[in-house]
Image (cartoon, rainbow, N blue to C red; front, side, top):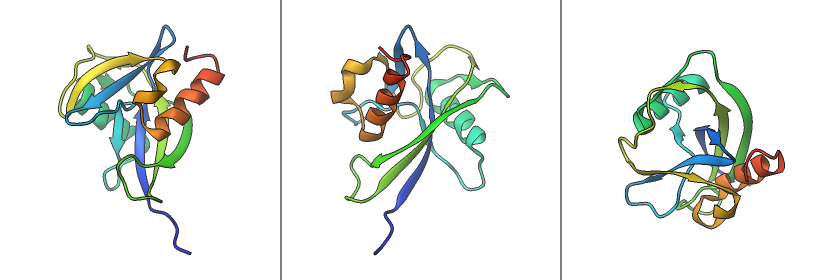
Length: 135
């Protein structure tokens, strides 16, 4: 039996007042926790720093990353069996959050917004909700 393909992604978890920072890419219907795919040879922190600078126009502060967890689910819009593996980190940053690159909109979501997010984000939202961080 063939092992399902995994898409390796790094995500940035930013929670304020019980809401989580989410983004919607141009041409997409769903919101996603910001982050993206690792480039060849990049560490988790390098991927996080690059993706967040590209998408949100802010700089991750070195040595402030905190591992939250790794989550896996069917990848939205991909063939059945293709899983996205999302490794999540919190970190402090400098600058003002601003949609950039392929990002159309930044929005703060809560646990009641499960209908407008990806499958892997649903798992992350549930995890954070059970910990009492996400309202």
